[in-house]
Length: 343
View 1 (cartoon, rainbow, N blue to C red):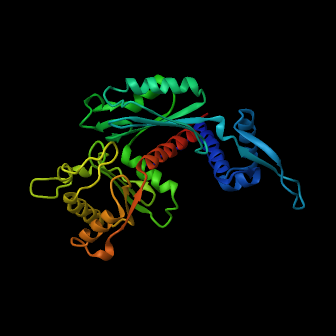
View 2 (spheres, rainbow, N blue to C red):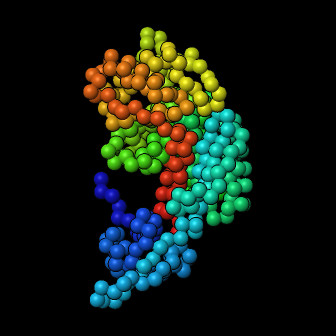
View 3 (spheres, rainbow, N blue to C red):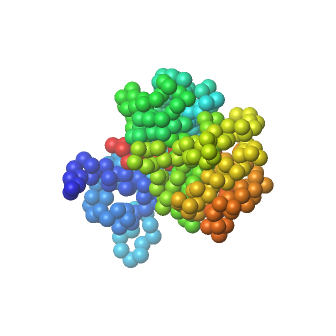
C-alpha cells in the first residue's frame, strides 16, 4: 500500500522541525549549511528562518568571515522559547522536571503519589506548573505499566488507570501535545541518549523496584514494544516449576523506598533472566539500578549466568541511576514532541 504524499502543512512542519533540530545539534548554522543538511532549497530555508526569527525562536549572531564571496549570516536557536514538563508517577512519590529545548533543567520537584485516581491529581500538578511556566509546550508522562499509543493497558496495582487513555485526556484538557510512556522504556532511552552508547546498539534495562520487576529493551537505537505493547513485562517470565520471575523475587529484602536490593535467593532468578535475555536477544549490555545491586552482586550474577549459557556470549552488566535515566528519557521524548509539533 502506497503512502499518501505529505500535505503542504505537514511539509512546513517537517522543515520547521528540521531547522530547530539542526540548530540545537550544531549550536549555530548559516542558511547554506541548513540548506545542505536538510536538503531544502536556499530560498525555502530563508523564508522559514525569517518566520522563526519573527517568532523569537532564532537569533542572528553575526556574519561569518568572508572566503572571497558574500559573508554569510549565522543563526542560533533560542532554547528558552519553549519549555517541556516531564512527570513520572511512582508508588511512593511523583517526580517532575521543567526543561528547555536544549534539555537544560529549569526546575525539579516532588509531590505525593498520584497513581490512585484517573489522572485528576496529575492534571492539578500540570495546571500548577503551566501557571508558573506559561511557555510549557509539551507533556511527557511516565507510568509503571504497559502503554499503547497513550492508553495504559496493563497496570494491575492501580485500577483507576487500567485501560485509561491518559494521553487523550491530557491533550483534551490542556491543548498541548502529550506522550505517555512506560517507565522502563523511558529509562532505557534515557540511558542510551545520555551516555556514549555508539558501541552499545542493544541494551536491556532491568529494575526490580516499587511496583515489581520490569525491563526496557532497546535494539539498534529503537525501543522494542511488541505486537501488543507488552514487551518488558519480565515479571511473567516462567522460571521455576510454579514460579515466574516476579514471584521468585518477592522474598527479596526491602531497604526502603527505591532500594529493593536483590537477596541471595534472588541471584539465581536474576541470573536465569540474564541468561534468557542472552539467548533471545544477545544484548551488548544489561543495565541495573545502582540502588539494587553492587559490584559484588553483579559478579555473582555473571558467574551464575555462565551456568546457563556460554560465558563468552554474556553481556556486560552495568549499574546506573534509574531515576536520572527515567527523567532523561522523558525529557528526550518531550523535546522531540515540542520541536516537531509546535507551529
